[in-house]
Amino acid sequence: MVTPAMESLRNEAAQFVARMDKDVWSATDEAELQAWLEVDPLRQGVLLQVQAHWLALAPQAQQAEGEVGGWAECDEAQTPSAPQWGRRGVMAGLAASAALAFAGWRWTQTPAAYTTRLGEIRRLPLSDGSVMTMNSGSDLTVTMAQQSRRIELTQGEAWFEVAKDASRPFVVASGDVRVRAVGTAFSVRRRETGVEILVTEGVVETWAEGDRDLRMRLEAGDRAMMSAHAVMDYEAGRSSSVDRALAWRSGMIDLDGRTLYDAADEFNRYNSRQIIIADPRVARERLDGLFRVNDPEGFATAVQASLGASIDTSNPALIRIGGGGD
Image (tube, rainbow, N blue to C red; front, side, top):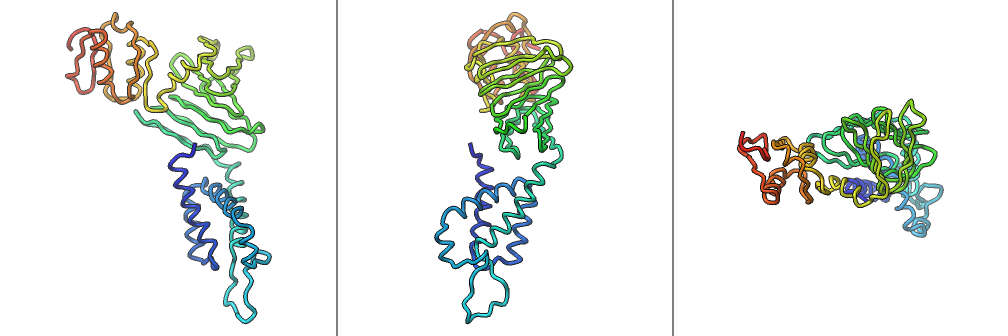
């Protein structure tokens, strides 16, 4: 899926490519292009893609323009004051330089760190064509190398749509747990007790560093919770359950019969106003429902209506469910 940000980037690249189609590519044009490219190395690749499409659109028109060896032909009666590049010449030259710059950056870029704030859900394209979606309060580092692609998740959760490249394994590391994929989609969440892996497409391999016997293959619909020394939980073929657990990608929390204690913990991941379940009996109750991640008040109201539990919203920093007032 093309994101609005990527679509906007392609439109900007297309404007430059269209200007290259003019008879003269000036020093001012070149300076503007270079300034645009320097903002983000990803723009080199976008420019190359747009150029390739542009050149493929009208090869016959290029021949009609009388281009020879990349130079625009001049009338013998004219004496040009400066060389004039036709579309093929300008674009071929720029494409070559951009390709070299892009290829060099692609394999040598330094690790890039990404963070999401409380309540922030962020979707980011990676230089290899993969896309990652980061959940609230997450920290990770991306390193792209010539023979590998590595993500270090130190906090939170992220879902990855991995571009296929068998020669460069895509590995997510979180603590001692590793998850490897070639072309698939999966999420990794770092919890206090271990690392949770959910697979939405394809197959991944997961293992623990230092323990060769602790290795599993997970397929679409599978869920596993792993620590450095054990597989603590495993469910297979639960695609609907996996999709509901990943409803946060659309800004939602889907309570699939979870206890109120777990539900409150989930809402607290996204909001500064925290939910407290003050009555242990209420905490063990289960609830189904679809809620927005930023609506803890709506969740509390639903609990009150469905279970008859008391709620106290007098404290702007807290929502207290059950157990009477403060």
